[in-house]
Image 1 (cartoon, rainbow, N blue to C red):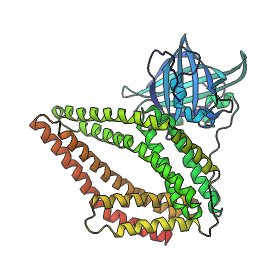
Image 2: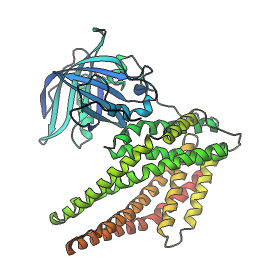
Image 3: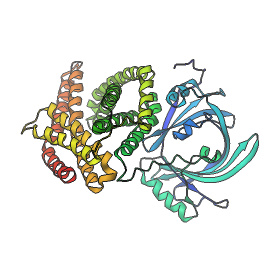
Image 4: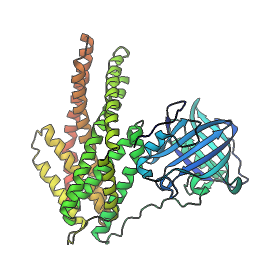
Length: 490
């Protein structure tokens, strides 16, 4: 899949885009806002690229070539959980950069990127500050859609984009702007409006009494779509959340197949589960390193100033390992095996290999809960780490099976999911503390001073304290989980 990259002036940069869109009338004007600084008026011309079938747009991905005052950049916007990540590359070439085509390989397939719309935006705006720190930017855009040099459509819209850590700032500014005439936006990006495309409709879950096959198909489709959405960000590797969400989707797909095994063709389900297990193993090392990097970065801030360089050195080592693991990950994501797996899960979401069965979704969820209950009963009074990890796995599976049955079981399933998530989160903390101790002990071998050894020892004790705290909390959490499971599934 690799291609020769055209020369470019800089490496891609990326930011997380959190924004609220609003519609406005032609006579709308930005009100005075405390802390608001007027920004210079701008004129932006963007040519959007997609396949002829609009594959990127349907995946909520946009690729555009933007020019402003003689400067040109390529901008790629990809899903990141409920937000979007904007990747920018300064490049004067008029064809999409190879690095972007590589990120989009899964979505493009054999399709070719072609210009699909040109949009010109006249932008006025405000930068809003609070306590001298950036809070948000408000952009009032007057948009003209161009076809063959002629304007075919005009519209105006407001965008409020978060610039600081306070997420409530967007809601506060939204309410203020609504009071001055702004109103609901349909959520479509400018490209969708330019092409008169409807936003991809949210998948409505099947009716509670719908056949099991419909619920299984719906659950598989949700996770396949989520996995595909985060493939580009995982390839890019700049935001850990992309890989995390891709791994979650992989795990949920496996859980759905496992829970629904009694109503699926056995060999078909087992083969697909095996390949998803392989993908989970491919994604796992990078995710584990992301968790450790985040933990030790935060832990460094809590150390004395003279001790912080030690953890900075550890984080640097972990980042180096992460870079290596990422290259291995890319090799696998570019492999024929991965491409074939994607083809198979897409097909599975469209037409899973079902068999006739009298079992209901309640039966499937009940089966996974019983497996969890057996694992809990085997814990004993002083469970080993491996036994706790097994309970964590069983809790995840029971939770995902409950999510499969959610639309038919209603509130009892919802309550069980909440209890399962609490247990799962605490056991996740336990596992993270175990891995952190392993990293610290490995790092101890490179300690050069008594002080370094002392600090590492203190940090090891903190990981043990984290685990002990979890152990103390688990008894009551698991008791409530089992009680709710009995109420929900019998």
